[in-house]
Amino acid sequence: MFNSENISEQTKNLLITQADNLMSVPYPVILASDYSRFHKDGNRVAFEDIYFKRRHMLNTFILAELVDNKGNYTERIIDGLFLLCEESGWQLPPHNSYSDGLGGQPYADVTRPVLDLFSCETGALLAMAYFLLKERLEQISPIILTRINYEVMERILIPYHNSFVWWMGNGTDKTCNWTPWCTQNVLIAAICLDIPEDMLTIILSKAYKSLTYFFNDYGQDGCCDEGALYYRHAGLCLWLSLELLKSQNQDLKFFFDNICKLKNISEYIMNVHVSGPYYINYADCAPNPGPCSIREFLFGKMTGSTELMNFAAEDYCNNSDYILSEEINLLYRYISLIKENEIREYYQKTVCTEKKNTDIKNTDTETNIDTDAKKKNCIKKIWYESTGLAIYKKDDICLAVKGGHNNDSHNHNDTGSITLYMKDLPVLIDLGVESYTAKTFSGDRYSIWTMQSSYHNLPEVNGCMELPGPEYKAKILENTSNSISMDIADAYDKKGGLKNLFRKVSLTDTDAVTLEDTFIFGDNAEHSVTENFMTYYKPQWVDNKLYIGDAAQIVIEDYEDCYIEEIPITDKRLSKSYKEHVYRIRVKARSNNLKLTIKRKEGK
Image (cartoon, rainbow, N blue to C red; front, side):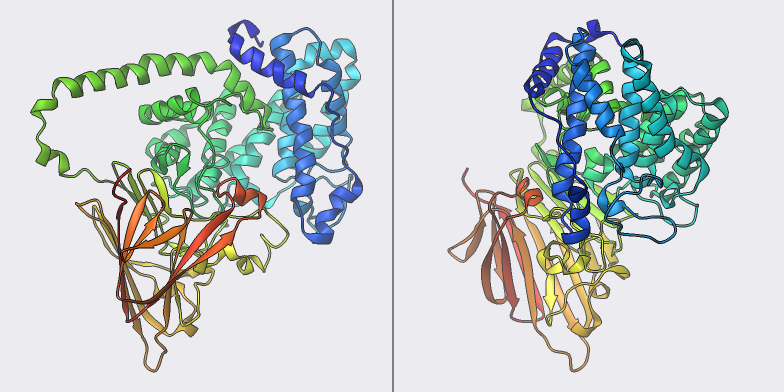
């Protein structure tokens, strides 16, 4: 039973204030034409804005009622519950496809529920509302609970129980974040509602099997090939799914017999963190996917990773929106409430105490430090063999080099690309992705500029770019503590005439990053190479050096021409990471070799 006495006054006030601010705001109306718009012009954002706003509002009213407990928000909660129950379909328009091949339908067929990411999320939200508010809703009218139970059973639990959907996995085809994300939400719905015991048993068994497929598809090193944002829909959903199974006394021996792998999965988010809001990003992930929540902390607790617990606790306790205002998953927000005291006490007793002791120790022993010894082995390298991702960290420098292939989930053609931060500021960036449209997950995906290798930190060879597919890959030649060498010629369109494209990237003892490319062509092939480098800060030439904001200076050797393109940012999703503009540096190589040396900008 929820006990509001365990919730801090600050948190209560935040939740109540948010709900009060919405009391006079009507729930958005969803018209049939809103749903069908995606079918007409490929725009999915317009529908998603109103679809998710309904769910955010309902979340807010439910949590405010839990902590206030005066009935002030009950009518608004009931309105929201019935609005969701009355939607023709909970699946998003781009996922409105049917098992008999009827894909891309403009309207949802109420008689044929679709188990997509957000139909399962909606089922979980309604089931959580049922679980948390059951007694008070029953006192108002048992019809409310009957309606919730009916809709979730008909749209989620019965279809899941009776049928197979691709994301459930089959042990052969590779799974993705859909598997734990959907599975987690089906489990929430099944556990929170009052369903027959035999039905629950089958659902638990199917969920367990899907999670084993997903777990097996992960590399032993725990790398998420979809990036930091999708770790939260992949690794973290795996964690919560396991907790839900554990709550039903399911045997998790298979997963805990592989605790090293599970721990590696949990610690990925910490390893790709750069500084502040920045993370190493690739594929569709943005560089600022948001701070850690209680879930990362509890995943670290499950796997015995005190490092992750410390990392997540500090992020959580310094996050002004720790109540997850924009989150639609009610269980995430509920866990954040009931575990707030635990994580805050841990932060004070463990993280702050360790920092204090470290500061005292460093002060006491400062005169005895061997400065030469400090310089040795001070580069921290993280190597993810399963995806070919190398990360090098030293002080305020973070360098990432992506090998692998061009067939990752949410893939961009970026084999061999690098990402670089100096002074904890972005120097060479990975754009991420624009707002999703019909084109994003279609055969035209790679006509989108953000997906193309020429808008990553990669060369264009005789006018040719990299191509998508598992065969377009890097060959690792040398992999040391501070550098990686690879041949990425196989990632390119063969029409470019490349025989080899050797790329070596190093973080040197003098805190310089060097990038050396060597191009070897086949007989009679043309020799035209233009290197591309993406930046956020406007590059400026001063004394034959290229300065990237206040972060870095670049020296380019043996080039014929260099020019800078200003690219306006007009997309809503990209603008969350990059305000107004990004820049592309285009460097035409003079010969078959090109070298960059990047150092911190002197001064500030």
